[in-house]
Length: 70
Image 1 (cartoon, rainbow, N blue to C red):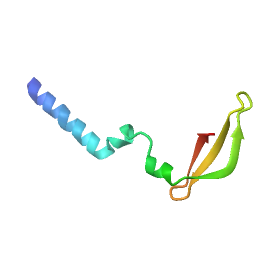
Image 2 (image 1 turned 90 degrees about the vertical axis):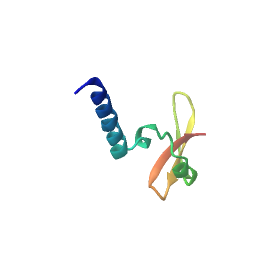
Image 3 (image 1 turned 45 degrees about the vertical axis):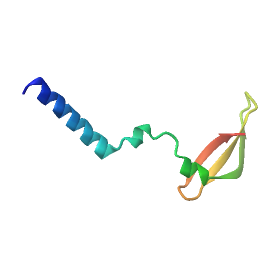
Image 4 (image 1 turned 60 degrees about the vertical axis):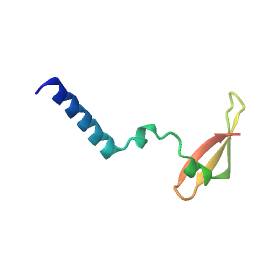
């Protein structure tokens, strides 16, 4: 096998890995659709060192809890 064959093989393998595992898993960032349907709860935490408050947001569709600064 010459160098060109190795390069083509590497590109094919990378394409298969991206197709199977998904590019968005590692480069998707934050999902706005899930965050948009989240609702604030009554739970509020205060950091004793800084005094900053954090409210818990709950998304009933996915069951995820988010912590957002107030």
